[in-house]
Length: 307
Image (cartoon, rainbow, N blue to C red; front, side):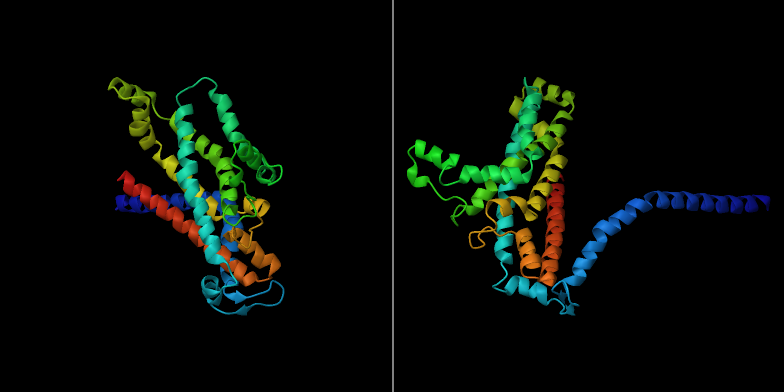
């Protein structure tokens, strides 16, 4: 009988202890939860609500259901498909040009070359420079009169290759892609470099004893170990391309004739130039959906490869 009461008392005490621990954890996390909800969840919820309205930002909105989403894909006055295509082109070059180059630099610097710290600093420096400064720098490079690019082509006898790079519809998007890749090579290189330096020296030595060359060690030992970091870099590159704004605005101003329009510049155009806040909210919701969808797809693809 007493054992039964003791067991019941122990269970009650355990429940109270677990509840107190759970309450302590909840109170400890509460400030972070409030910040997360206030800064991320609440704005997304408001954007979703406003995307279902025709709203100019001042007068009360009119509920129109999913009409904004329909117009986004069908209206000729909204360059959504063009902007999305341009963002995906930037993402393609970021993943298949920027990241391999970053990985190559990380692998080379991970071999403990002389001056390793110096090169790390040099390659990472563009990340530290303001994007406005970088945009102005590349505008000077692209300048058709005194820009170093056209002058270099003239010096090489390639006068026919000279262009008004930013103003030519054929080269305008490329004039944005190049500085985007250049600016963030160092960022991804540093992420991968940290992973490369974290690979156990024992693995390298074992592979070398088996007769593997440096490149074979990198391919069969180092790269498989740092796959989680490569996956993170791919996610950052794709989602960052979808959200790109500043270099496009500074270098081409989304022109000529909207040839370099991206979702973020289109969003700004809808909000501040056309006062179509409902459509602007729709674009922001689509960007959120696309970023989450690509992040999940990339994660699933890497899991498949790892399996």
